[in-house]
Image (cartoon, rainbow, N blue to C red; front, side, top):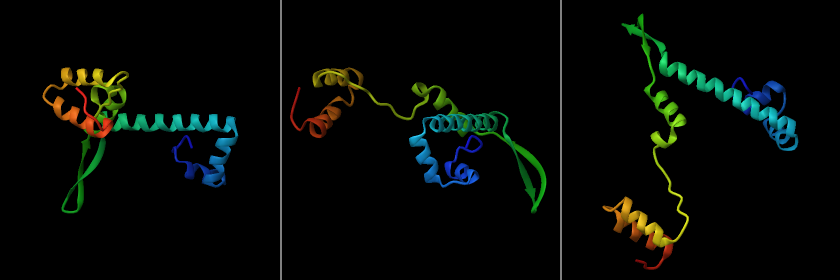
Length: 136
């Protein structure tokens, strides 16, 4: 599995069913540890390849009238974005969540301070979706 990270391919190579592999994983702690190691190794291979394609690029053929006349190196901005999101999720994430411990009043205070232009709409949404009652 370390070569590909795909359970069904690894199971077929081992001559067992996919379900048998999962059964062993759940009943044999040594097998489960080896499974996790194989997944880590496969993910490292994928990460290495993503970095290579992002920064070194890949050669793609250039065609003219149906014939290959050269090559051009293409880099992947998308892979760079994914790598940045993985390395610095707080900076490059697409969305965020806020974990509020405390009272509704504290939440309302934070909303008023952080989102003054949207505070009333957010309060109404909290009121109707979460509380079902009015609050100040």
